[in-house]
Image (cartoon, rainbow, N blue to C red):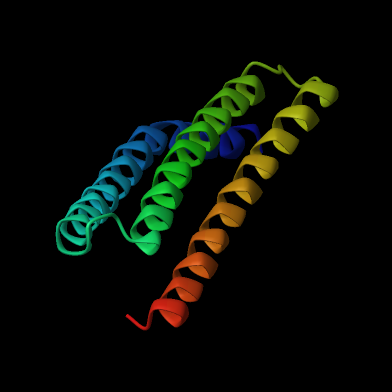
Length: 124
């Protein structure tokens, strides 16, 4: 049982940098395209459109929250590994991982809802 836990924790810790890199590249690409769209809108209408501002702000917010959540998962994983079987420390680390994952899910759902609303409001 301990070997399985150690294997799972090792895999999570090894895959975390990959997730950080993939998340950051996708978020930066989205933010870059939103900035370009905002610049294009600013050049054509005299100012950035509200949907471009909201989309850029949401992407930046999602990126920051994603990085913080991944860092929290890494810290909680380290706490989990170094708990040495102490039930309180294991429980605290497990709770921190669950909260970080729930936070990522909330941010993802917020992104989906805002994008849906923007599409309905602007008609794009």
